[in-house]
Length: 110
Image (cartoon, rainbow, N blue to C red; front, side, top):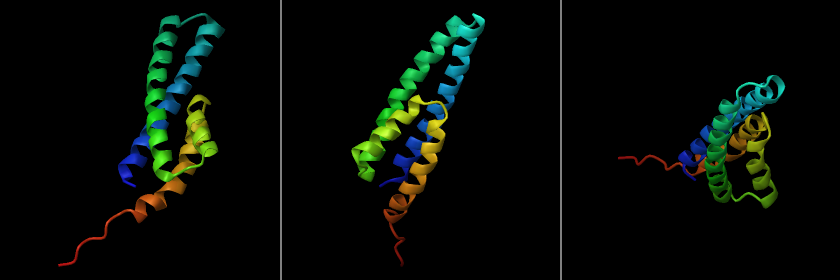
């Protein structure tokens, strides 16, 4: 497996998690303090688009790592639970890094 597959997943996991936290703050402002309705709309739409990209990259990583369906489903859903993506990303990286290291070609000796 190429390291770029893992890197894409990691970037989108962090971006999705941060956007979800921002969305949660906007929702508190909107419903708790009756302010920021337009900002909440924009942030929710941006998070939705980024979550779709996250789903694509997570599915790509899961298919290349040959994860069982339950694990893949948990990784996909973690983008919808505030702060879960941070913890799931750490666990995924620990499990997938050996697969990336095993696929690294050895340098050719002259």
